[in-house]
Amino acid sequence: MSKKMVILGGGESGVGAAILAAQRGYDVFVSDGSPLKDNYRKDLQTHNIAFEEGGHSVDRILSADEVMKSPGIPDKNELVKQIRGKNIPVISEIELAYRYKGDSRIIGITGSNGKSTTTALTYHICRHGELDCALVGNIGYSFARQVAEDPKEWYVVEISSFQLDDILNFRSDVAILTNITEDHLDRYEYKFENYIASKFRITMNQTADDQLYI
Image (cartoon, rainbow, N blue to C red; front, side, top):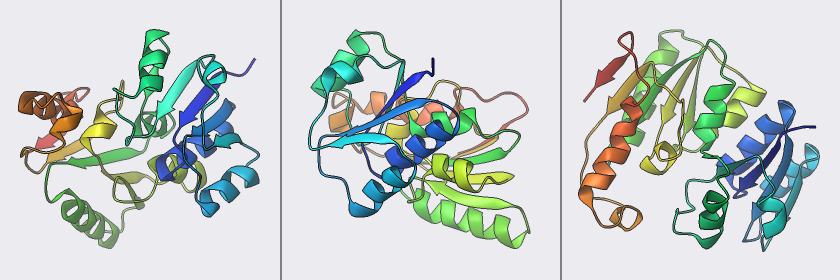
């Protein structure tokens, strides 16, 4: 039996994760409470991935072996509470992509401000340095989709705190933390220290061989 993976959210990260998971043999089901954009619906149909839009089949979702939650969905969401209450593992898209990146290396960039500019500049430097690299993550293109469709030796990944909240083994070979200022506190119980801890999760799995720049 294939492992059942439910993807919550049918946007860029959700559809990218669905494509990678289906490629790797998972039994994939995408569920979005809102209507899907036409291009994402077409992507799922092209890859013969089961999906629903405009609502959630709760029983089917709660039968999952693992759930990939899109970063825009908060933990206070009632369905997410039910999933966690059933002890179903919840991961982020970058965690799934990391699982199948092979020997590729990651430059992960996070921060409250300037991360998009820093990510784009880092990618520009890497590309002009003739590295086989891709620009992915929160900047707009799914890391998981890149791994599935056009794997590279290096990934320059813009990472939000929401993506970091649901990592388990994800590790950046090079991590860059641009800064931390009060932001998104509604997702962190209005406690700045919780938001800071979320950002520092980029270091969670780093080893002595990795690099961190703050």
